[in-house]
Image (cartoon, rainbow, N blue to C red; front, side, top):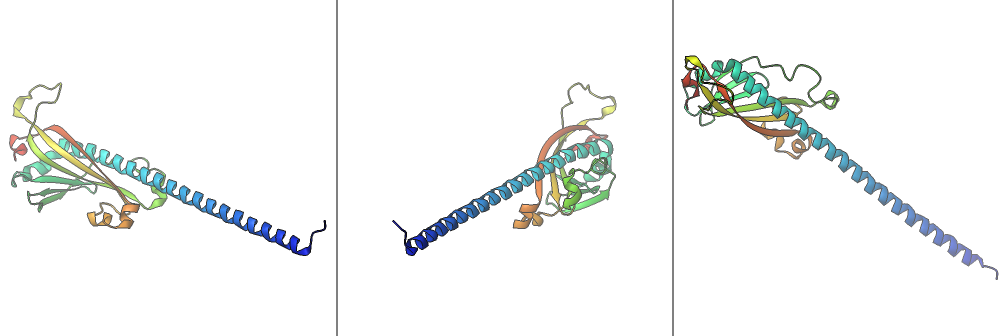
Length: 213
């Protein structure tokens, strides 16, 4: 049987329709794969920034504890004026005393151990081109006489031990020491990271009164 021209035109139309459907299906699969890849990349970036903020907070704990061990008298002596006051140490070297209402009563500038400035970039290769920088704030409170650390005997001369509670917040942001308002936007939550760590340490102080309140 010979096909009529109408039959051949119908076959060509069916083939074109099938080709268009296959093309649309491939485009949809490509868009889905692209979206999945972008979400995976964004998730990996967020996880990396959260880990980096956690490392900065952990480093801040060591830095604040080291400072209080070495230079605690710089801030503990003026702190005796305000009952239930706390100490705030940040990565710029600024140390402040806050009263129980959160009002700043005293501040000074000190030299902290240069943990953030020595060696490679604190954020690794990611920090070289991202424009983001690490910083931290540490709050020291809960001052009270503490037990002797394991392996220590009661020191001569009456030097007591003081237990202090440290709360460190590490930041990865576009500027050092961002404010809480920087994280209250969708852009801030998407681009920046913050991590909080807590620790307690028993430190030796020069005078018993330093550990009061």
